[in-house]
Structures are given as structure tokens and as C-alpha cells.
Image (cartoon, rainbow, N blue to C red; front, top):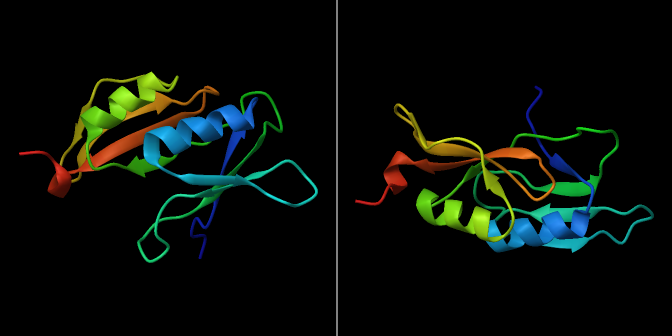
Length: 123
């Protein structure tokens, strides 16, 4: 069917970007005990919709992935992104009928988006 079942983030410094995602989004990240350097990412409760992923050393220059990450408070998330070494790359954008989002780069320069769904917007 072609459903996304896993994602990988390419990194020059996997441990640095692991700390970034742990601090900003509360992800659980641990080094895999297998034969290659690889970090497993748990993004939340497996009973909720979503996927888990991994971090690896870049296979080639520019290797990246764009992940859209659900957040409860976009303004607070934007502050954390910058506090922990990320960069906000766009203004907040309204996605009609969906929510509000921004694109940002993590500590390794990978592009992602953070989105606060309308049902979670602060009143």
C-alpha cells in the first residue's frame, strides 16, 4: 500500500540531534545495540497514531527528511526549538481546516515542520 512505517534522520552528530529531539519534543531515543551506529526514536504512545524512526550518520551530503510533528503549543515549541539549537525557517502559517505550522531546522540542518492542530489551539 506504500504507507510510511518508519523515518530516518541523517546527522553529522547523531547524539547532538538526539538531545535536540528529546528536549524539544520529549521523544525517547536510545542507541541501538546492533552492529552499526544507529539510534532508535520512540515518538510517543504506540496506541496513538504516528510512527517511530531512527537517526543515522548521513549516507550522503544533504541527506535529510521532512517530518511533520504534532505539537500541543506551537509558540512554546518554537521557543524550545531555538533554545536547543534549532532554527525556525518560516513564519507561522495557517493551514485552513487543519492547523498552524512552521518549518524549522534541527541541529543538523534537517528540515521539519511542527503543527498545532486547530482543536489544540489555545483560546
